[in-house]
Amino acid sequence: MENKSFGITVLATSLAFVLVQLDVSIVNVALATIGVRLRTGVAGLQWVVDGYAVAFAALLLSAGGLADRIGSRVMFMAGLGGFTAASVLCGLAPSAGGLIVARVLQGAAAAALVPSSLALLSQSCGDDAARRTWGVGMWTAAGSIGLAAGPVLGGAMVQLLGWRGIFLVNLPIGLAGLWLTWRFVAATPGAETRIVGTRTDWAGQVLAVLTLLVMTGSVIEAHRLGWASWPIAGGMLLAFLLLAAFVAAERRHAEPLLPLGCFAQRSFSGAIAVGFLLNMALYGSLFVLALYFQQTRHWSAWISGIAFLPLPVVLGLANLLGRRAASWLGTPMAMTAGLLLAACGMAALRGIGAATPYPANLPGLVLIGAGIGVSVPLMTAALLGSVPKPRAGVASGALNAVRQAGGAIGVALFGGLPTHDALLVGTALLVAASAAAAGLIRTAEPAQHPAGGKATAQPICR
Image 1: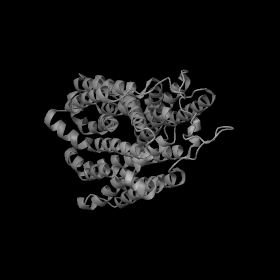
Image 2: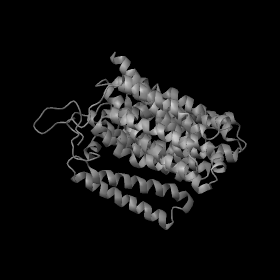
Image 3: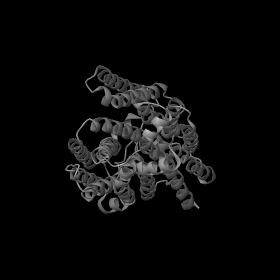
Image 4: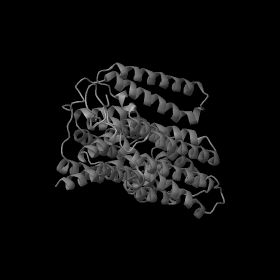
């Protein structure tokens, strides 16, 4: 019965993560049709994409802390229900403004879903590290396939059902995930846990949201206004000042939103660094390659989506090999090897041009998918294993907030570079991520010693 419950938890959380990642990328191929049908220009279409991304990144950290307080199951069901309802609003939107508002609501619900789903997985596997790695691998594989399959599925849906179909397809998936969670997934502890108390860190939550909102918004607009423009320079300066204020607030609060003591755990810090660098490279390279396929090769969105297929297929399969790779090599070495493999794949794509035969792209796409596919579940499992269970939600929220911010920065940075230079930067970022994995990730964190006491089985994260 316990194995069945764990399996259904993996299934329900994976379905939710498919929705979250799918709606990151599926909308891109429908933008031209949306612009015509809803009579909006480039700025309106930009915010159809950016409204989701900004709300998602800005609210992730606060959502992680809230999941720890009210219980992951409650937070997960609220987020999944909200996401499904917002998807219906997107599909029925009568205007561009209505669609943008609905996309913001989708992003906010996605922020509730991601940390609570990871926390549910972590809590359902108890102290079984191998089970945690397997569950996270399945969850990551589902999300990775959803993200990379978005352009392919979106192209097909637009052709068959129109642009509204890309949102309404979320309804049956969301309802299935809600029913599975309500029927089979056990409730999780909330505010009664020992570490998470009842004093809400309102200052930390507000400053975290503002920091991510200002930084992400500045990066998104930098491609249009230029990095040297006063609005962007001022926005980035304000973001760093808000970040400094957030750190100061967390140091003073008795029960902080993000316990800074977590960063004393090398695996926690390493996973955060790897997640940021990896997403910069991955999201930035996907953006550049999409432009290459459509603008340089002059392929349609449908054909371009098919051209990407080797990457998500291999990535999804490699997610399932992360556990075995860790058992053979150990988590640090397996992550390092995977990231170096992805760097080799990105380097192999640097020579592509307008006349490059498509088969010449395959080795690079396969290596990127294989390397990142192995690394991501190990990175996530290392982070969850470095914090006490009551902090699983806030830890996963921190990781995913940093990854989303890294992805936004990567798209803005890579979008202003030629394809050759962008892929060179991506290669360097993946090499740096491999160095962080080798230097910081540990198979097991050293036991912590409270004053005058014995070593504890769990690291202290306050």
